[in-house]
Length: 283
Image (cartoon, rainbow, N blue to C red; front, side, top):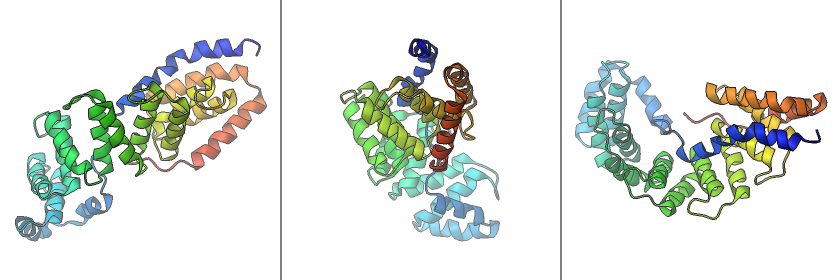
């Protein structure tokens, strides 16, 4: 292993590009208020008239249930235009979940016009009421100048508010800000801490990043054994993308010859311990 560091540095260069992607995390899941939305599964066709009467009288919960029923199309034909109407009614009464739903529709350009400036306004309203998904996405809009003027300070502020609620994507986004020095001094140690926290909270996309940081000693002590463990975990995490799994497998193939069988066994044991501590991914 006399020139292993040179060899490993070369073989890992392409994987380090993944660090750039951390600042452009994909949009989070559509819904976060799982208890309320799960109730839409219990709605029966005979319940609709009463829900419509309640919604017409200003009952925001009824509006959300009607919106979700029409969105899912379980007991009525799916119709996002009708769903959007019901969610709009709830959003205008100040319900964060409905405000986030409308923001998403404008953000993605589904049902409503693709307008990230309008999306930012609805995200802002939901985020101000503590909606973590909205806080994280609003941070992304500010970081990348989507629908708003690019403002790293605003991005950092919204990411931090979402991180306080242990939002895994926000933890990764804030980590990337520290890693790249966007709006803050570059701080690999803080980046590593946040990426590690994101992994623990179920963000499987950061496992490759952790492997690379450990391999190169960025923010933590360098360890080929630990790097192998992170790459192993990334290669077999059910919720991870196929692309990530393939990259992880490539890194395992390149690191393997530089480790003894005992070291590989130790790395796999550590990855199993880490996996046991990872929360289920947020949907």
